[in-house]
Length: 125
Image (cartoon, rainbow, N blue to C red; front, top):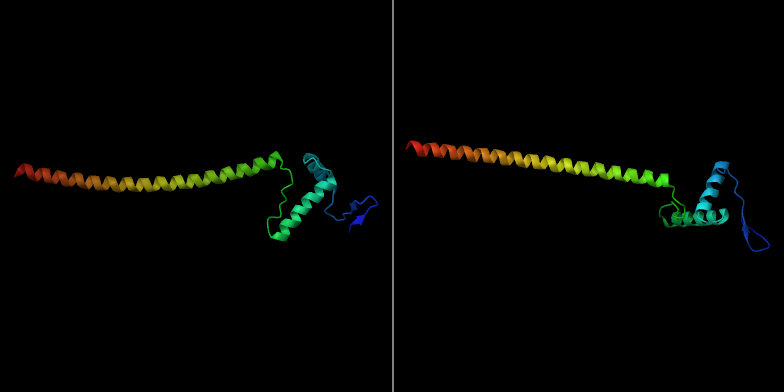
């Protein structure tokens, strides 16, 4: 698969249906944003991905530069998830407080009724 050139560089050719014009443009743009040549970028990313696969870690390469849109989408999703979690916790806490207040109201009403009965008995004796 790898051919050694006279100057010591390796050369390889990729042939697949997945290699499209869009893929090439994507790789070229990513390499440019990462400050690398296309070949260096492909080697760096595929090496990271291969090591991650072989060690059982995530196969998402760390060398791929993030697009702002992707980061914004990921952050928006994370914020929405946290907001939902906080909303559920807040609702649960509010329900517990309402139940505690209702119990306290019932206890205070019973204590007041008892005091009123005792006060009436004391007046008429």
